[in-house]
Image 1 (cartoon, rainbow, N blue to C red):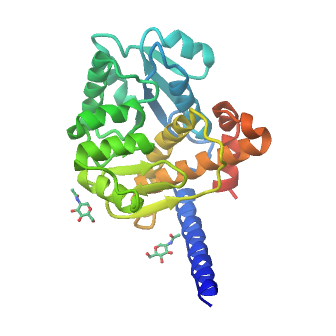
Image 2 (cartoon, helix red, strand yellow):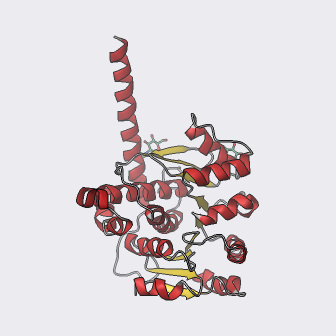
Image 3 (spheres, protein in one colour):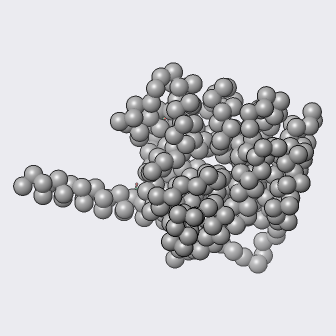
Length: 318
Ligand SMILES: *[C@@H]1O[C@H](CO)[C@@H](O)[C@H](O)[C@H]1NC(C)=O
Ligand SMILES: *[C@@H]1O[C@H](CO)[C@@H](O)[C@H](O)[C@H]1NC(C)=O
């Protein structure tokens, strides 16, 4: 009957997508550097998070600590002077620079760039004009040094005002949520998103930005580099807590570095950044799933971050 055909078509598609997911997870496993006693500190990644102001201190903390928990050796936060003592007090493990509201912010961050492997720009940034203008300078300096950048939250607000900032930059990854995606789409493609064609919308936005990698977060995450479209539907939970996106951006900072180190041979011809993004989406969703098993409705981002180690092992080391 028609119903049975439909059911079969559905289950075939589902099997196919599980196989795709498993293949892509294998590519993520290929880019993870082995732990080894001969390496020196810093080789597995020194990540910088640009964000954190008087109002928002949680987001940069979540992003930076997630980078460490995924396996970065050092995690820096470049925030405003008011945010710095607060972020330091959350964690003795982060290196916190109170420079983002300084008139010499760009120079202060630029000094560190030669020692950083990736930047995560936007968590807890806010929309203050002076800060955004400093971040613009930091993005330009990072591009000039070919440093990969993950852009989230109010970093995406800045990109929507000035798409030229990242246009064509092959080492940028944008991680918009639904709202941020619409704003970018409107700014770059000058029209509303076709809600019946999420895959196509993400593909077209990536292409219009010169094949910059775009990760649209949602019930399923849709990822594109202008050529390929991947869907990440690793089981999470129905609980979405504020801060989940910071876990994603922070872990993505590390994975982007690893993926670029590993190179396209390890990713079977797929774009290293796309594979990194798929890894970070899967990990975030797995953390959500595990935290929800334990805490249910009261799950928070801190509970998810506590799951990073176990989730990483389950997905990538089994
Ligand atoms: C690698 O690429 C080949 C050719 O496109 C494909 O058949 C194979 O399934 C891919 N392997 C993985 C692990 O994705
Ligand atoms: C982006 O990728 C598409 C598909 O491969 C290609 O046709 C297009 O020329 C690329 N655009 C840029 C700016 O590289």
